[in-house]
Length: 125
Image (cartoon, rainbow, N blue to C red; front, side):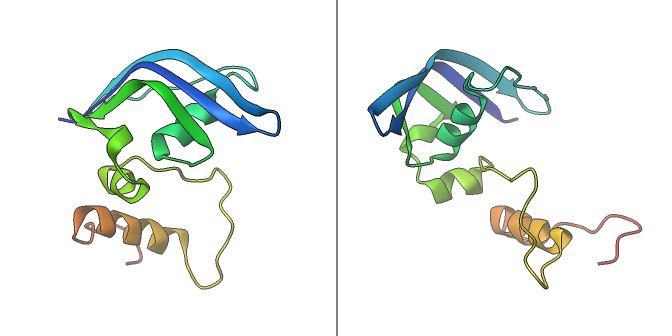
């Protein structure tokens, strides 16, 4: 059972004028099988939270902790975070000629699990 725990997370983003604090004390726990929706107006920090969890270099965690099954996410490289299941997918991904979305997702899942996922009934693979 996986659990993502975010405690008192503070994140700044680098701007032309210098660092700007965006997140100020975020707490969130997501257990295995749970679905959470992060909602709010533009500029409220939704993307900042996602980018900082994924390890984007523009976003600096200034304090707080993030653990996944007790492991320190903030100490992980971006690659290690992605293999643990923390990564971003674009809402409207750019098409890569010759690469279907299903093939891309299957390849990503194989990289995480070390084995190809089972095909769903009715799929073309």
